[in-house]
Structures are given as C-alpha cells and as structure tokens.
Length: 303
Image (cartoon, rainbow, N blue to C red; front, side, top):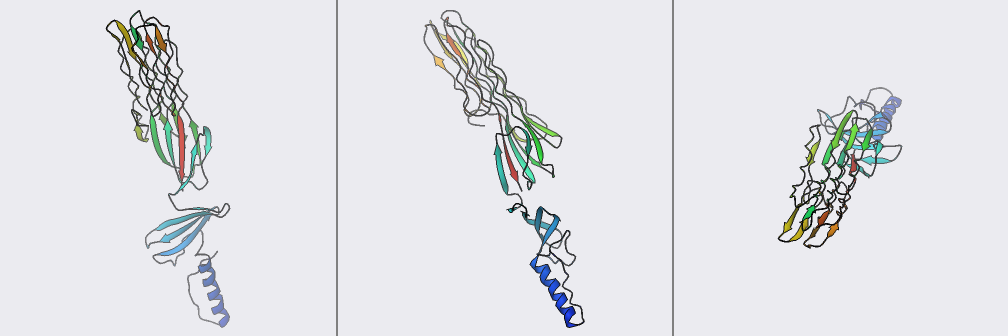
C-alpha cells in the first residue's frame, strides 16, 4: 500500500523508473494510507487504512470524504454504509454487536398482561373479566459510536389469577453506553363480578426517555387495551369477556345461557400480547383470566 504525488523528477533513467514504480504502486493500492493523500483531486478514490480490520473506500469531492464501502480483510466481509448486516431475535442479557456495525435498531415489546378472572356471581347474574393489555411497542435507532455491547432485558408475561385481576406484564429494556430505553409491560385485566360493566384499562403512559416510534397496540396494531362487558339479559344471564390487546391477544368469550357455566380466559398467541378475560354465568365457580405472552426484542445492525 502506498501513496505518491505523481511528481516526475528530472534525473537519470534510473530515477525515472523509480518514479514510475512509485506511481504504479499508488495506483495498484488505490492510494491506501492512514490519511487522505495531499495530492487527491475532486472525485478521486482512496483507501483509508487507519483501522487494519476496517478498510474504508472513500471518495474525495473536493470538500470532504464520502465512505463508499467498508471491508474487513480478516473476515472477507464487505458492506455499503447503512446496509443491513444482520437481524438478531431472541437474545437476552449481554449482546455483542457485529464488529462492522455503526448503527443498531431495537424493536421492543413489553410483556403482555394476563386476562382478568371472574368471581362467582349470584343466580341469574353474570361476571366477565377484561382482556389484559398488550405490551408497549418501542422502536429505537441508536448510533453505536464504537461501543459494541448492549444489555437486553425481555419483559415476562403477567401471571393469571383465579377470580382476581390479571397480573401486569414485565418491562422490556435495552441499555447501550449508559442510555436505557424501556417498553412497558401491559396491565392485567380487571376482575369480573355480578353484571359490572368494565372498560378496558388504559395503555401505559408514553415514555419520554428519547425513543422514537412509541405506540400502544390496539386492534391490528403491534398491543393496547383489552375491553369487555358483562350483563344480565332479562331473566337469563349472559356475559361477554374482553379480548387481550395485541395482534394475537387472547380472544373474548361469550355465553347467553341461564344455567351455571364458566370458562377461563383464552390464551394469547403473539409476542407481548394480553390474555383474554374469563366469563361466568349464574352460580358457577370462579375462573382465571387468559395466559399472556412475554415480550420480545429484535435487533437490526447496519454498517
């Protein structure tokens, strides 16, 4: 690897051959060196060798350098700046980023809340729990700045309870270089009893810790509040339990029978989703809310 300013000094034939050999070496190695050659003109390429395991092909535009390609001669890997290097799913604890990664994007889901249980109502009455909330969804894009380790914590699913409110999901978080961003767990569903009409719990407050694209998941969005109502229909009891929040939240249950009947809440099937609420008619015994799912972290690393 060499740099040469193309100066042709006068002198002997041997001197001329030396100058030509220096020019050839500079051309063959793309003017490689630890700093930009002093003789580069606008639109000229050169290779920055400051870091032996990260060679940078640069274009000088007359004002500044632009990186066109990154190459690791030790591994043979090469990427254009900003290109996706890899996607990592299912990692917890300490995570080592790819050696050539300049930026990481973290997609976080808090753990889902358990569905609300239902207590034994009086005869010809009904009880229905609300669905648990889906966990908060957060997308955080972070320049790594050469710090290639992050710490990940995935929120656990909330615990269902028989004849009681569902447990809240755990928070999911990422810490990089002293900065922590959190996706909150979903709240558990409310317990149902004697025809009480419940509204689903509100989603958690949006964090202000600097992340972007924070949202609650309702309907087809990736979490959000569950919902439900329970009521008596004339002399017969009927009840409708709440669905869990999130794509894949436990669905609600319904019944319109006057006889003693009870059903536990349905389980969630997607990551970070809430469990469905339980439902009871007449004097059937208590039931538990649906089982939610744990949160998740997806990491995308870019050159």
